[in-house]
Length: 258
Image 1 (cartoon, rainbow, N blue to C red):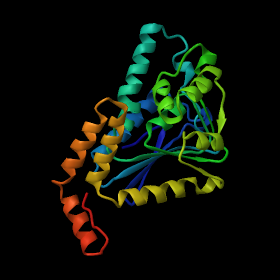
Image 2: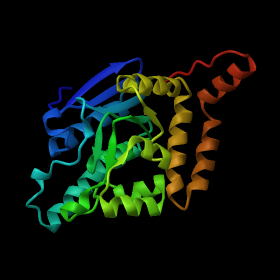
Image 3: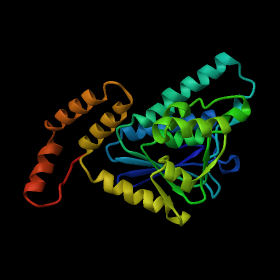
């Protein structure tokens, strides 16, 4: 599939999606969101791809927010539809994807860009990255899940401070607060490091990875423990379980089929 705003590369069961609007600091316009929806759906249905890395083009930004020019004249009803479409078609799609997704944050991740990163399962950043949710400076609040995902990652108090003050934080502060998993001092190593982590994930049982993502996401609900029990028990009926146990007992590396 050909995209106008994305560069898609496949290698060793991993797809790297680069948001490529460098002149606009990779801002998310409607076309880019539509293309992200299509790209993620393609991966969901592609048995040759087991994981996704999302990053931004250029040296400055992962995604520096939404494209404000597209919604500057919206009324309340149009704003509601904008947020609803984004949630359903991109951000929730990413969070609930049963294939692991890593955000490789190579620069500014602001507004919708940080919300995109937070929807991913794992976040890594270069040392120069800056993160924030500056929507209140526009008379808005985060509309793509920022008020919900940020408190789950860094706590209510820090989230209130970030969102209400609209301040940016450094990669090191984001790491200390639990917003990201790792900081790469050498920016050129970011994708390489993300790829190494993803390779270590996709070599594991595909069925178990899916079950783990589903169970972990269910921790956001009151039924999380029951969901874990269901996913755990379902694993026992899979070929992956048989192969994993046999490999352990035979003291060899498991060979999982996707």
